[in-house]
Image (tube, rainbow, N blue to C red; front, side):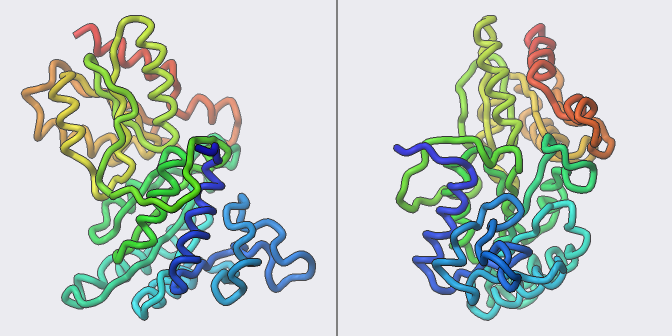
Length: 335
């Protein structure tokens, strides 16, 4: 099976679905890489090159460069979805959600409910998340927890290239609005990815590593940190089970509960906010549904409740670390 980057996997998913369905369109800032400007039309393909090459195959009627106005991008995509197209809109950085949040949580997320189930909104909103890119406080946040809190939205957080392709294809084929969160630090990571199209169902966690002593639930980039920590802990005789939920809404609660009932211990590693983030949500769910299975308290490993620092040294300290994860597991393993 060929090795492909996270970036290539997303590009392949977009291309294959655009070839399969002429109703799939892409719109966003610079997605055509400079269309309408002097010079090469496909100069780059988005901020980090994810859509490069698509304008040449599908043209300006399906790969649409927009003005710098997130409210117009999302509003146009929501309207297009209701009229029969399958738009994939790009909110370049998730940090810009404030400009267009009304179109997302008050419009697209509510259409099916407000129109008695008769309205479909097959809209995908791709957006970048995550610290570690030296992009400062306004371009480094991990805000999937805010979208997860909105009824009517499906939220997808792939941690690797294989999942990114399969989950994006599933998202484009879904008849409800899906927010697809891509961690910018993962774009150059590689994995085995088939050339052919495939889909991964929402709401099914990936068992990254089996274990018996501690359950570790991690999301997006933190899955790699959790797996590295688990590998190291295994050499010390501590068996850690690592679960990647892959989607936060729907959330595979059953797999998490089943694992906790086996191990009796839970660590959650999450790059979203310390207060009211996914770690808190999962901890609350497990406390309610599997309290009797817990041998000790749940540990949540998150960044501090501060903006993302621009200083490289401080940013590295702000992000949860492999050593910090290992230390937390050592604390749990004592009980």
